[in-house]
Length: 274
Image (cartoon, rainbow, N blue to C red; front, top):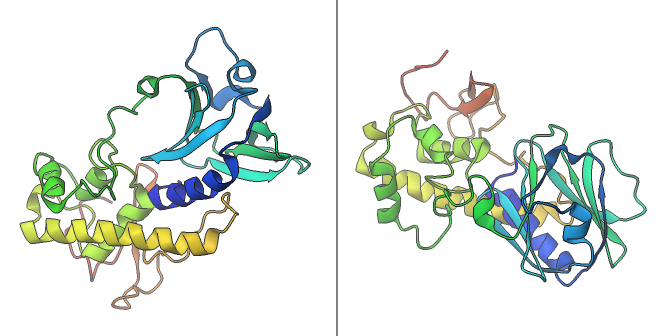
């Protein structure tokens, strides 16, 4: 699942290539992911002839502003990926929509899971879940005090809270594991059991982990925005490997098909899930 660091770097790459480019043609190969939020129109009528004026990110959405004020809002969900490639490149089986650009390149949306969504809209408030999003995890306005205040009124397990976009926007399963490892907090602890010091440590870990990941991805992703790079993470998807801090094997617990990775030695806690 692309998360804040991935999408931030993808946004930067696409900003360099797409701004000022006219969409010459639209090919919808698999319409299941497409949501046109303006009745009575088609993707072709909505997009063809339009020029991209801005590429932005909000939480786990990539946003493309067009010259008529409309938007393409993409939520990749579990497996969606964008590919910027020459028009002559052979489409992949799971390419859902292709935008032919005036410079001879394509922007293609590929999704092996078929769970992502591409919204075409003139009003971002019409995009499901968009207006409910909380503050960005790296927003300077999200101060330590503001972070603590948002946590204070919530119950439940801390990992689940971190991944709720209405609380803090942009964090998913992988980076929640990394943040909690950095802070030394057991993922299944109740938020209400955390001390003030632990919450402050969580905030610092969140800012550091996400910022560092962006820098790594800027260096390693290059123009290959369709490739997921996660091998540098400390615990996520590292089940059985030695903890980089203490050497104990990394544990994995699966709940509702979601894997949580952590170190039982560095993140002690009571096992509440099996």
